[in-house]
Amino acid sequence: MSKGILLVNLGSPDSTSVGDVRRYLNEFLMDGRVIDTPWLVRRFVVGLILINRPKESAHAYEKIWTPAGSPLVVTSRNVQKKLAARVSVPVELAMRYQHPSIENAVRQLHDAKVDELLVIPLFPHYAMSSYESAVERTKTVAAKIAPSMKVTVEPPYFDAPDYIAALVASAKSHLDGGYDHLLFSFHGIPERHLKKSDPTGGHCLALGNCCEIPGPAHATCYRAQCFKTVAAFVKLAGIPKEKYSVSFQSRLGKDPWLKPYTDLELADFPKRGVKKLLVMCPAFVADCLETIEEINLRGRETFLSAGGKEFAQIPCLNEHPLWLDTLAKMAGGFLDG
Image (cartoon, rainbow, N blue to C red; front, side, top):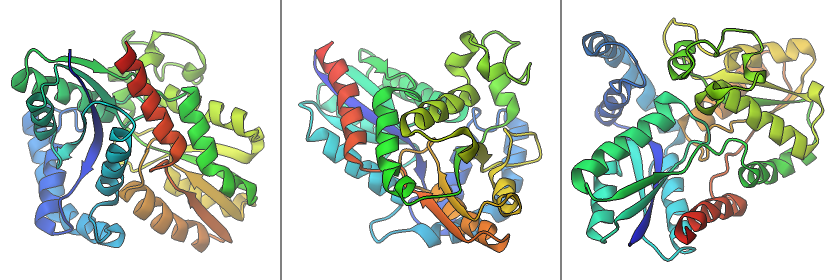
């Protein structure tokens, strides 16, 4: 058996042009696991969004774009290369939307005679709009291009000791610098996504403390897994309960999303006496539009305009050595198996 590894992240427009941003948003929003409505309804809604959103998003991407391209893609490619240098098998990178595509990555692996593949979703937590979408798309593509290829998927690693240790190490210099409060801002999802992902049909959001009650729903519950990441992080870092909180960012539309909302929390913190704020985004392993523009630019402005004095966004894991160690260990477990 010839083995290989595929890293899969979300994706980015190919450039900051309005046309490229429109193509990216169309593919992303037309995914039935992102906007989970019947196709005709989704097509109508996305059509409305695409009237003005591409121009607005293109302007946002211009603020974070690097000479080498999208920060998310550039960082992910660097991680791919560094992981490839640590293992003896082919390592490819794919984005769920746009480029480098899953189709091209699977074809490259198939051409390299890979017949046993480990897919590592670059999403620590399970959500139907990210982890599940990437995994199912990869399986569909592999079944079409390389039907005999055996596909193994790395499970969510939201509280894996190596991942948590990497997070704490990456945040250490900021934590050591002192702060009034640490906010864990996770990407938001609609509340209905939690319920759709609940295999029991009656656990998620049924009770106020549902994430604290063990059960089979937690295997696919994004919210519970986010809380477990935070619990493991603060325990290892020794952060007292009164110095941190959790919120959710990037909501879209009028349906209820996971609360509390990050933008509202940022505006309210100074009223609660928080003057020196740290924000980290553990749902992302590489800095991107949501961390650089939404948090470090717009979020900073919101907090400072409301009376805050010091704001810092703790960078994502990006190319941190312990994160690379974590990925190498995932790969090692597969290669030794």
